[in-house]
Length: 376
Image 1 (spheres, rainbow, N blue to C red):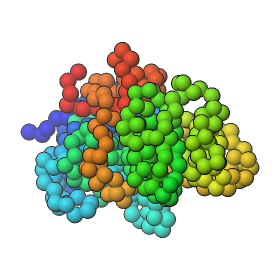
Image 2: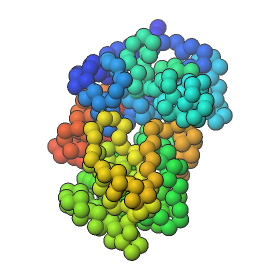
Image 3: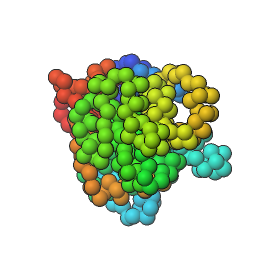
Image 4: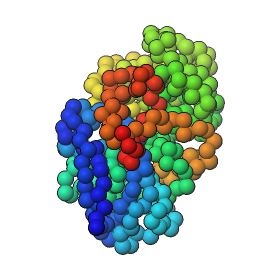
């Protein structure tokens, strides 16, 4: 008898999540069935809920940050992407974007995150050709050809963070900070925490985190932040710029600024607090949040800016980042809170959009995750 799995299916932008049941398929050769343990609720998911990402078709099972255990292996699946042997029952992390390997972007430009024919778990429509392809589901069919995945011994509530942390690694690989760097992180979500942690690992002697709520900023100090600026306490962007410059050599400004908040207004502010010939890394605008006004002459040209934007994380960044999570040097598990059932998917995304990162009577959301097996 075939297994039956439940999933939270979003019918349309600003629509309804409905819990549906699916017959779990037999895996074809080269594929496997994952029993989902946790799926991170990302700001990208929240903005896909509102229709903010072009090219997405509905209905859809969201969830591109997920981990679980191998439930059933298809013929020929014997090892993960770096050669570790795998068996049913092993915990694995799925790299959500699967490039074709043959298009211009994959083969020539060597940037598979922007593959012209990419398939991506959590971004594909819920239809027979993309069955059970998102993490808000008890089972995920890891079905796309050459889907990369990595085995890990991490607990699920840390393993689920791997994907957002690779976005920060992507940015740091472009920025290549020098020893003694002063870095600013705009945003105190999972990507921001990744930028904080890995900037320290790559030589930053001072990292300033700007964001909120207050509970997140307190946790940022545990992750190594040298200074935090609460945007609810310091509401004036000009004052925040002044504080940052006061922490730098001769008041020149930060060497590197990471935008991980996902608000367009953060960009001109970040450019203002960066020194001439500094580096700006855009990590937060994965959905369309609208335009922002910048004077290219004064904000960029006169400052001789290096400006990078990073779309997604590829296998290389997962391989680079996973060993650091496995070392457990900082309390990664404190980021994953709260954990919610499928039936609360809408509440989880609306906490990002409408409730100021608050749930359940005002409790601060750090990084919510869906446990599709949780009752409720």
